[in-house]
Amino acid sequence: MKILAVTKDSVADELGIRAGEELVSFDGFPVVDVLDYDFYNSREHFTMCVRSAIEEVDYEIDKYDDEDLGLELSRDIPVRSCRNHCVFCFVDQLPPEDLRNTLRVKDDDYRHSFIFGNYVTLTNVSDRELARIVRLKLSPLYVSVHTSDHRLRCEMLGLQGKKAPDINEQLKTLHAGGITVHAQIVYCPEINEDIDKTIADISPYTASLAIVPVGLTKNGNPALRRVDADSARRVIAAVEKWQNKLLAERGTRYVFAADEFYMKANVPVPPYEAYEDFSQIENGIGLVAAFRHDFDTAMQRYESGHVGSVSLATGVSAYPLICECAAAVQKKFGGEIRVYRIDNRFFGESVTVAGLLVGKDLKEQLRGKPLGDKLLLPRIMLRELGDVFLDGCTVNELSRALGVPVQMMSPDGESFVKALIGVQENA
Image (tube, rainbow, N blue to C red; front, side, top):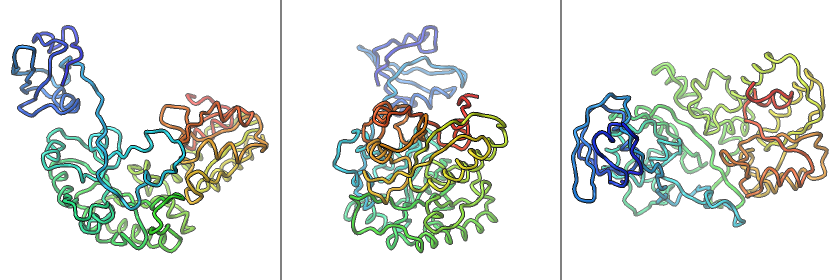
């Protein structure tokens, strides 16, 4: 791995290491990417091999654990593509219309799981790489299990006839190596109904388990069934049974169902405390409870504010909650708040989450509607750190099309209140 720069007066500089040389190995293990450097840079004693134009030199390193070696390396880790052909793959369900190229990337890279929290299947991870995960302490990892039945898992992942590692053995190896694993099941009615067995098999080796409903767009696999009220109630019943058992045995509920199951079943979501440390909130688990909690706290905190005339737009799933909270804000602070439900015509109307709404649908369904002085939208509709919707439409383009300023807000209850009453986000 090429050394891009060396910090002046650092350990590496004092050793005479120079930019342009190559970092070869640590303790005899070849350098694969910057994660090797990050791990050893935090240690006190190790060997490091560096190759120059004329020779390879092994250095014995003795330093403080918080002392920086002083090497600058590329932090780019190319994405390892998925080798699976999952029956429920969301990327395969994307419409043929132009979308950002990044949306069509099938990421199944354990390194990105460690860095960004992406869920991976580990089907493309060799035993050597599994040992590297343990050696470099790449923890936590986020693993898509779906089922502990090896044959059924291969079928769901489209790996029939291919040699694939046994997820149960992989989880045992990671657990024995001190790696924390958060797992998930994408529940497909009439396919992976073995939730009880999967929980029994993997719970000793994983820290938490999310169960999420299969997401089907209008281009989805016709062989798959959508989650309905009955199947949602079955999942909730299984989750509650195991939560009670594991809370008594391990002091944690461990397994959690996505909020969408409770909405499908027309069952109240559990209280805030039931989600413990919200370790699976990025999976749509506990979002409603967290939003309500933060909203209630903010409503007690703020006694004055100016609402004016504003509008909100959200997806089908969140619409009842947003209507309820908007009404409470209007009752306390006055003003006029309109809430609009946006159907997802781009991906298909069975896709009901706000995070998958696109600019085109917002334009078409809000054009001509009374929007007040501004339109508020949750930032989850946009790419991270950007102002672009999934279909490439920008916030400015949407604002021009609707003839009203568009303000993006963080998707939590406190930010919701602050945006409506005019409190700055950093207040």
